[in-house]
Length: 435
Ligand code: PMP
Image (cartoon, rainbow, N blue to C red; front, side, top):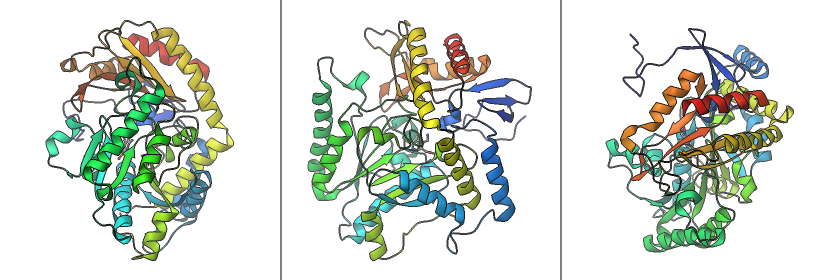
């Protein structure tokens, strides 16, 4: 009997004992191909020598120094590394220990920015339906996932949820990309005007939607139009790249492809690639300056922020990705994976849509591809597929059931960037059998 309190109380999992490149090995010797990177985390695979050595070196010299007293060399170097490569305007990095913490810091930075600049009434947040931004109370309220929120209501109340940029289900059959993205931008503008332009703090979105929809990239032009609306009303644009960032889509920041700069960006998962828990909130000079020249103190903090070992691990991960030129590999492998998925599942009687960017690919499961009718959520298809995949020795990330009153099941694939082409065949074969 296990004394571990898992979220899924009645389910027992294999005990993982080792990692080997793209595989996780369980105590019984079984090998699992990590086609989901855990939860889109393990982009370097398991047991990368460069990272192991960097962690050992850092632990041996200094594992931890509290940020009320010190910064550390790896913390400084990692901040420089990120800012040098971040979208224009993001100039400072606030380190945290994971994705939800990064989102909480983003929300509090936005609030404090408006307090410091004499607009404390700007508190209302606008996000999107069927979104996930984390499990802490602020991040949970931001996400548009009614099922996850239900047990904890009432949450923070000043949040509106708008239509996601989800072409498969939200774009009209005859609607052009331009008309669709214009409609979504107008919906944002209407909501800002309905709430009162000087009451709105920020718009929050994932550039490529991960956990809730399964690797849904934005329609071209969407984020430019959203940025314009935010600028028109002085609303901050917060992009949550916790899952899609750090090279997963083939560029270090997923938004690079859309040519837009946010005011705040959150990253986590791929930053430390699972070697250490770490996240970060990147902020514009405008926000930093308002706080620096105002109270001079960000009213926030956790004990383990900027942990020296975590920063050293993340720096080694990012330097390894760069020195091994793995971002171009992500693009090549992403194209190869999509081609294989298309070949195997393009005509599948229960797969309605294939989508994604780079090594962030999704499949949407439907009862009938012609009508796009979803499966009955009581089937819990995602749990069945997860178990069937594990039986095949494959980790994938199925999600589904009813999210924000809308049904749908999908499978997210987010494998490590170090795969060989043969792994792609293994992945697609195992997935096919599981489905
Ligand atoms: N934002 C997004 C977009 C995420 O996908 C997640 C995790 N799935 C989070 C925030 C929360 O991150 P964490 O689980 O590290 O708290």
